[in-house]
Amino acid sequence: MVKSIPSVSVSYAQNGTSTKSNEYGMRVMQERAFERRGEQYLLIKSPPASGKSRALMFIALDKLHNQGLKQAIVVVPEKSIGSSFNDEPLSKFGFEYDWTIPPQWNLCNVPGGDDGKVGAVGRFLASDDRVLVCTHATFRFAVDKLGVEAFDDRLIAIDEFHHVSANPDNKLGAHLVEFMARDKTHIVAMTGSYFRGDADPVLRPEDEDRFTKITYSYYEQLEGYAWLKALGINYEFYK
Image (cartoon, one colour):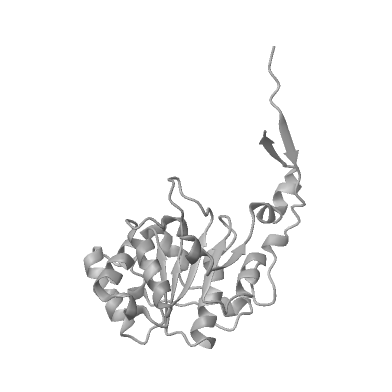
């Protein structure tokens, strides 16, 4: 006799709402995040494929052009993710500015190790260019060498933020505490899963309280998959 496995069939509207754009080319999650663009500390919790990279572009460009910040530094966990922040012609879709990054400042695409790239971060900070992309490792070494004060009046955007930990041994987390204590940078943290596999919290409670949270759920994201409705596909969840 085959044992029955209890399950729950959940139907979503799958009406495409999460993929529709407003007059500035922003999807729902991006618009929600952009509404809080003036906050100094933003934490965006949103699932994969919801558009976190582009949401950051909108926010960063506003901070550079309208909020007086000098530069934006995007920090990603590995080189392959750097391509998520390549040039985007946002004005083509209605936004006022385009996202552009000179090839020499996407350090994920530049040959060489972190030691040489730390020097590139220093040259970028001394330049008039506006956007740099580097790995978590390069950024950690750069802060070690240059000090947190070198990043004053700049935006630091940390992708895959759950790599940060409140454990003092976590270098990126320790630097984040220093930045927030100095309180002269803006920080946008982005993650699809705000938890870690170990017992360490991502942030200390007193630091987390300073972040404005933008939450966009998996359920909201699933509303955008209109093609699933056309195929008659629902989702099965086992109890």
